Length: 356
Image 1 (tube, rainbow, N blue to C red):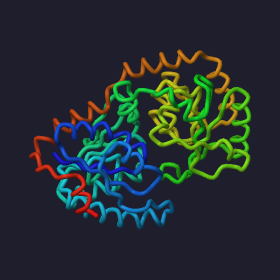
Image 2: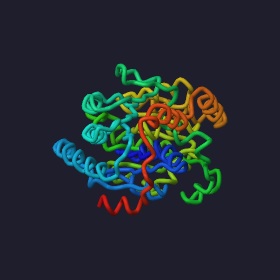
Image 3: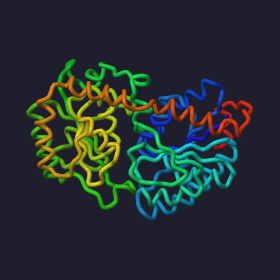
Image 4: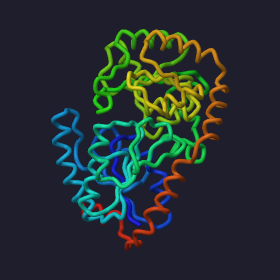
């Protein structure tokens, strides 16, 4: 079987990497396509997964419109040469269009409910797989499962935290630290949304610094007084840091959800509530708010609790949900393998050269 995975965000590499590896191990061919955005290329190289870049990522609205045509064409051209039996993506418009043009099936994963994007890819998509808690109803094409995307790579079966993270961060073993994530608000689902003001960001760091070390990851430029707290980690080391952190505060839903799934208490600050973060709030793992005063109240509530409380809550979450990678593997085998015949093996480097 030949599967093309289209990637639009670093989290999508993690989402699909174990699934792809499982297919590779059984003799199937996979290829990842991606835009040159953040650090997707770095992650794909670190995982040893074959990929082709379709070019730079556009941030402006005009650029995104132009990119719709550009990436549609480029992905179609790549796919025509790779000859996939199935396209898989996290709601990729480009993958949906390329699959349609080539007469192939597109399987989309969806957990944000971003309707302006869904309306464009849904007509060209075979099935849309979404968490049970996603409030959006997508009709007969929707397949629900009991879990979240982050469980595809952060369940204990796939991820083991490395205590060497303390050395990587320049800390003593067991020294408490917090991770803060600020976003750029350029994603389509961020339009019109908001997080913390610069004043509140500074106040937050000042309060946390009295109790622990603080590390900031920010897509946007930080106020000058906070630049010293910005940290650099290899992307593949981030989840180890999230696991060992005392607390994670994030304007981005993926980081907040990843922390929660790892049993690290997280505060999600965004006026666009994500259903999976709200579900993790039910387990006492993610605290959702846009009110800055509530953020500071949550700090005391979280830090006054024993860390084992959150690990126990995480264990219950794992027990209550499915292995998402195993679910996707079984679904693809049950619904798509019978429609395809095993293609002749092609050396990944040769495929890459042909495409370029």
